[in-house]
Length: 488
Image 1 (cartoon, helix red, strand yellow):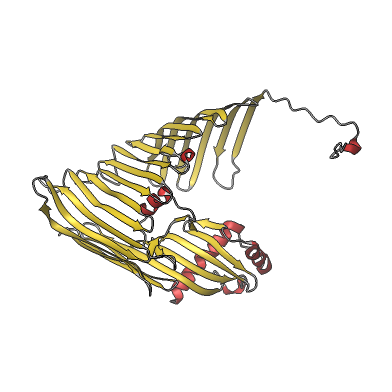
Image 2 (cartoon, rainbow, N blue to C red):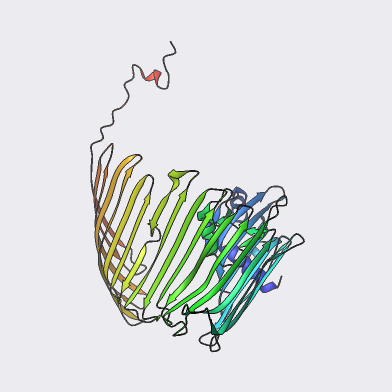
């Protein structure tokens, strides 16, 4: 490995250790080594990029880490996807400067670079080595000519290969009298390679259709892996790009609509994405999976609307997801989500109006939430005024067990920011209710005044609570009998 890359990855790991362990300045080598020794497989050190512990060995005194995600490398590169499995020593040397860790072994190194020049070209270059498997990608699209070629090698080893090919052509080929033209065609073939099904870097051992939906949405170069030794796996897929013929795709463009069959299984995957209007103001993506082995079915949809399509000004900017899952083997696991509490459906109108909403329905309960606010930041780079007011409602109704819980809050912010100094006043009033056994009602008033450093912030809070719970202490004949029981 080049020295600059070794130092770069070492710095990422050192920062991740600091995120998980706390500020490393002032800590001794013994303290840091003890912390590394206390780690176990599955521990997460950081999220961006994801750094997770895979294995801790003693002896030898090593820790195996997974680094997964997009990082910034150098100028001209929009983003770089990295998947690295690396073994480091638990011993650290604080005299070496900013990277006191020692890398013992590089097991997996996969890199995918995205480079582009606005209205000229877009390109992907990927190359990697993963435990005996070579993989790579070379994609180039000339935007003025509307011509592109994408060759994808998901993996090659002594047992098989995964190869994909796609060609974009500048002039649509008419498909009969349908009014639709073909502008791209491609396919995938996998032999003894299977989809890599993971959840935040952790392998999924009993996959269902929803795991294959997540896999279909993932276009990173590490999405395939060698199949089991005792099984012959085959995957075959075809894809195409279609446009409305009369206007050469100005009204409608469907990009990479495809169908894939995976065996053993079989598993059927159908999906793609499309744009409404050539300016790509509205984009919709969808995927449908039927998983025969797990007897499950899943749909994943997403949409993003920007009118006009600009990074500087939008009348409307909205995005959201719709996911659903159904299982014949375990019917109680079904769900339908219009957004989620972590990823709600978002809508922004002009600069001032912001809305979030979600609705989640499953076999046990219904949960929904709405958050509406008005306001924002106005001003120049060195001075701006902050003003915002809003309200939010969150509730869920459960029937297994029977529960009813909800909250309502109103809030407001007012402040000013001058260069790096910010004065911000925040007011919030929130009511939370819970109807079950016992009943609970909390009313919370909160005031915060965010002042520039080193002036301490001001925070005032008042809580009013009501509950019909009346816990009673146990009746004991004698304090010496605490913990005893009647054996006769």
